[in-house]
Structure formats: C-alpha cells, structure tokens
Length: 219
Image (cartoon, rainbow, N blue to C red; front, side):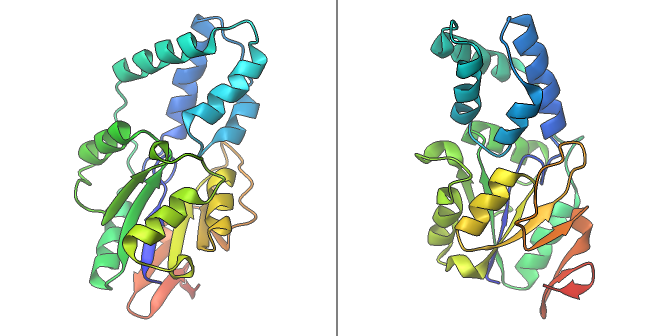
C-alpha cells in the first residue's frame, strides 16, 4: 500500500444521518415529494444524482429553481462537524505518515463544504491531497474520483486502499482497481458486500511498517 484514501461523509464525520434529517424537513416544508429510502441509494453521490431522482418524483417542479433555493438554504445550515468527527482519523493519518504512506480525501461534497469540515475538525493540511467529486464530470459509483487521486498522488490504483461507507463509494473503489475497506453503519444498511473487508469502526484499522491490519489480521 502506498496511499490511503478516505471518503468524508460517513467516514471522517458521521454526517449522513444529520444531512438526511435536515434535507427531509426542508423537502417537506417546500412541498417536494421524496422517498427517503430511495434517496439512500444516492449516498456517496454528488447533488446532481440526488436531484435527478427528485425531478422524476416531481415532474411539475421547476427543478433548477428548487435546487438553487436548496443550495441557498444549505449555505445557512450550520452543522457542528466537530461534534460528529471521528477522532481516530487523525491517528490513521499519523500512522500513514510514520510509514511513508500518502493520504487523500475523496469526497462527493463541494470543495467549500470539504474545507469547512477540515477546518472544524482541525484537519487542515493533514491530507496530502483533497479532491471534490463536484470538480469531475461523473460521480460515484464511477471510479473517476479515485483514479484522479491515484494519478495526482503518483500511485497505481492497485497500490491504493479506500475507506468507504456507501454502496456507491465501494463500487467506485472496486471499479478503480483499489482495495476497499467498507465501514458499516446499521442505520442506513448499505450493501458493502463488494468491499474487500468490512469494519464496524475505524479503530479496527491499524497501519504499521509491516502493512495494514484489520482487527489484528493482515489485509
């Protein structure tokens, strides 16, 4: 392994539940029909994928105007990212640094949101690379974001390990030809069966000079 790539929402921060609750309340207040369970299929994707589904459920809705209103709303929402931060992330970064392993953050969130999370969680400057899927033409489950990370880090995809919490993220990582660690979350019940290995918490992952250990076992 030459690089460890982190997803952000659901991995670095336990944010998916918070976002779902906020979004569902906003949709209800604005008379927009949604399917909470169906939208969970979009975990790990960029907003255009989510709103593509919403457009099908609301054929009479001016989607462009609604999305613009939604984006304005999101800018006013202040999430306490420090409260939902998984502190073991820093330990993993430190372990990688000691072993000469590069680190990257690959998130489908907009870059301004990523920067806010990094600032609130005191992770600014900790990753060797930060990539937003919003800057790419396609979203997870397409492997583009992970292939971009490997290219910028100067690594072969097979030399990279990805930590993901969603079906779309795991699928993207596998399509990129990378080893994928699936982080389970019973609340969403994502299908992570395609991951090379699954963990219930990040603390099960340990990086040493001898390699990557999962629950004390070599991966």
